[in-house]
Structure formats: C-alpha cells, structure tokens
Length: 239
Image (cartoon, rainbow, N blue to C red; front, top):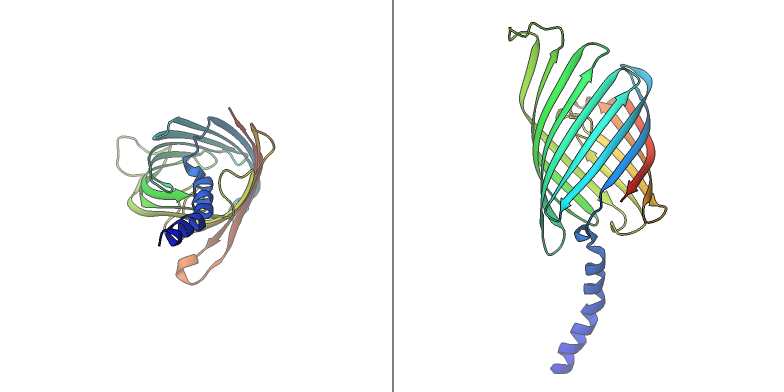
C-alpha cells in the first residue's frame, strides 16, 4: 500500500510542477508603457490611421490601473481609465474591472461617454469577463440647459473571452478573442469584435506586439457582413 501511495505521488509530481510553473498569472506584473500605430478601414470612414498609448500601473498584487489614449487621423480622440482589484486563487485569479471611457468625435462634434463594471477570471490559457455598461452620446453643439440633444443607454451587456496558446510567462504568445469591447470601444451586445494577437519578448524590457481586429455588421441579426478591420503594431517597455 505504501509503495502504491508513493508511486502515485511521484507520478503526480511532474503534473503539479507543470501547473505551478504555468500559473504565471500570479507572477508579479511590472509597470509598462506601450506605443502602437494602427491602420484601420471601415465602410463609414474609409482608410485611416491611429496612434495608441497605454500605461499599466500594478500598484500591488491585489490592485492595478490601466490608462489608455488614442488619437485618430480622422479627428477622433479616446481616453480611458481602468481600476482593477484582483483576488488571487490557487490557480488563476478573479478580477473586477471598473472602466470609464470618453470618446471625442470632433469630425462631427459628437461625444460618447461610457461607464462599465465587469467581473472576470483569468489564468494562463484563458481570460473571461462579463458585466454591464452604460453610455451617453451627445453633441457638443447642444443646448446644455436642455435635455434634448443626447441619448442615454442605461444598460448594455459587456462580455469578453480570450484564449492563449501558451502560458503568460513564455517569451511569446498568440491569442484569439471575441468581445463587444476593447480598450477604445464599447459595442452593443449583438455587435461582437473578433481579435487575433501575438507578442514576442525581445529581452527583459522590450516586447513587440501585433494585433488584428475584425468588426462585422448585423452579426446577431442573421445578416452578418464585413464592416471594418484594424491592424496595430508597436512596442511595450516594461520597467
């Protein structure tokens, strides 16, 4: 009986060591800055380019913040901030995203302000979150003493599912995601975005990023058609 017990323990040791090694979500993240350039095309605006800037601020093991900004050559500017409490688990972690996103569409003098709260779980090979967001859309030229000239959407479903082919601690990785939100957009629940991303760590500080995003129209109304695509590339510097 004792021999069987020790045989089972020895057989499980490699599996346990693999799980411990691949649970790199618990590895302390570092402060980082990211700069990206984008090529985008959609049927409304045609061809255009964007410049993105991001900052990740891991205050401690249980809390981090993210700051995002985007300037578009179509005269559109987006700013976002995310506060993220984290709750480590034996494998992976739970997190809560509280996000504010402001988009100034100066080309048509419109604004879009969104507030979102979501709960998620992530580990090396998967990240999933679901929540709600509200948004206010209006014109800069409206009469600010009147309630006319803006629209309010108080409740929208938020979701994101991303899968990874390798553990996060590896020096390269590829992921695929479906979501109705990204760092600069919140879409209605029936308008999902499909994303593919890859990254490569050049050394301990520099990371190369390449991402693509496809946006169909009419997806959940059984009349899906291509609407737009975005391709972005750039570098991240980890302190």
